[in-house]
Amino acid sequence: QVQLVESGGGAVQAGDSLRLSCAASGRTFAMAWFRQGTGKEREFVATINWVGTTTQYADSVKGRFTISKDNFKNTVYLQMSSLKPEDTALYYCAAGSPTPTTLPHTYIYWGQGTQVTVSS
Image (tube, rainbow, N blue to C red; front, top):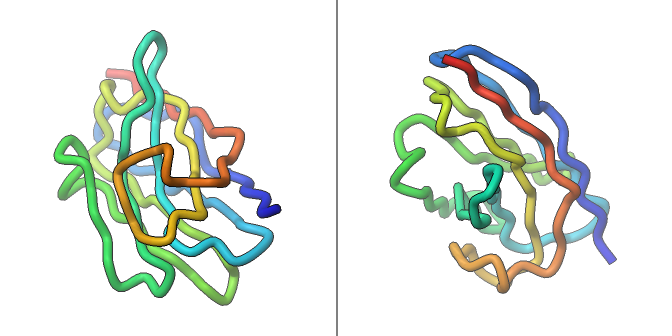
């Protein structure tokens, strides 16, 4: 069983930056970030493969968010820049998919989420 612990969320102003971290307790294969706004379905944000050479982003965050991985620390990061109010959501870290995908059901392990609130 792999435990995922997210951190780094908070309340910021539009245009600000924030970095989320997700520390894993074991081998995770592909990892990803999803988010869920109030009253909305969970949506894909970004994913990265085990070695950190392949990434994929949702169109809504492409060019603003960057996913990266530190295998020594077993941690994945989500650097978020030029934040918008529509980025407000609970951000979840996911892991355990054999390959990086946008589909939540392919990930075995999930964190508890970290809240990001962006005000205009």
